[in-house]
Amino acid sequence: MYFCVVCVDFFHFSFHRRRGFRRILMTTTEDEGGLRHSTLCRRFTEEQIMDSIKRAIQTALPQLDEAKLETLVNELVTKVGVEGPEDLQFIQEDDLKHLLTPIQCRKILHSLKAGPVDTQPSSSLPEPLPVASSSTCPISPISPNSAWVDNFEVPWNKMRPSLRRAVDAGEKPAPEDRRHLIRVTVDAMRDHSLNPTRSECVVVAKAITQKYPNTFLDTNEEGELLGCGYFSVLNQLKTRVEYLNRGNTLSRLRNPKRTQRDDEEGDDDDQPPVATCARRDSYGCVRWQPEDYPDGETSASLEEKKLEMLDIFNREGLKGAERGRVEDLMAITYAKQREYINANPSPSILDVGKEWPFLFSQKFLFSHFTTLTSVELYTRLNEDLNKKGKRLLDFFSSQITRWKKEVRAVLKEALKKDREGTDGLAAMLVMLAYFKEQEDSLFLLADVTTTPADAEAHLSLPITPRIIMLG
Image 1: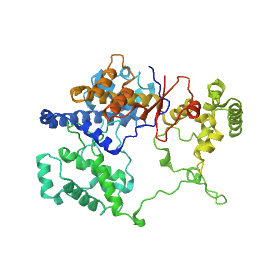
Image 2: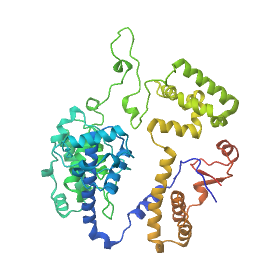
Image 3: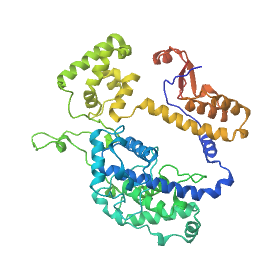
Image 4: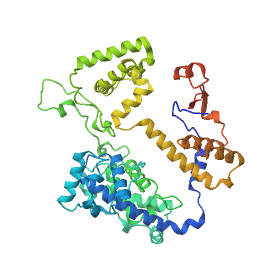
């Protein structure tokens, strides 16, 4: 049977099942314990080298996006043979031209030939921890008002004796000892700023985890780094800051609402400022609000094209999305779409559907997202599902004798040879079998010709999320 995902709003497992799932992922054999420390140290060395190469490249190309930077560094290390930032002076344009534009290649080569690149962090704190691409740890620029954090010292002298023993032994601390360190650290931070920002807490969290990685780093039972390594310490620091500032409005930090006048030259006192969305709303976007319309287009001409699309939709519905003319019109009117979506006050979803109905088709929803973020949503989703699914399948297959026959049967079918591109779906089925859930608790099967409208009209849709499978 062939499957196709129509909607991806899923995983409705109860809390105790999620706890059981975490226990599965943390299971390991005891004979691996002796390797944990060496594995972690080796991981640090490799990641620090990669990080120093990244910084050298970012010096020449600060605007290079993270995904392309990651690909470039991996290519230089694995194929070209770069072993550290000092080797970058020997690379040639032929090594880069299939990944970068000619101008970007020349910028890198010029920067490297101009002199040695300082790949050390500018602050007095230890070198930043490597951050995994899938990490949830935020990286934010430090504002000029945060200069104190560069010279901040964690009050290790206030560490409890029991925590000192854990640190000396390279062991995880007791929860109460860890909380005590967080409290005294935040107290010391508030001597400089009553409400330290999250980016300031990031710097302090890095300092704590890098000084005593075996004690404070986020690792699993095998010693492997989880995410960026300092996320749990960061969260504890920021939570403590927010707790101490509860009800204290004088110490809260607020960004003033940006107005159009802030972005325009000159000042006309006769016209009141018009509030617009704050800059932080555009985080992660590459085309949040285009400044210029396409060549030869005006606001009036784009409005006419919008009315043309509304006329097509009124006559043909969402089937009109397959017309080439609609595809051209949606691409040309992107700036107009963003103007409407970014308006203040923001329009409701129903209003967006009335003004730009084709945005609610899968084709143009994905297209708009790609233009906005430069991320192929459908491709990225499938890649991540398969990557995480493969990890789950590898775990279950490595301990196959532990599972009941129902799980082994599903696992055997999931591990067939022609499994390319199906690991994500297969992992879901294995998890359903493990938790003794019925397949219809997650999936609804429908004919391959079923449309979303048909599904709503003819299928018995439950109140909890499901994945509709066509096949």
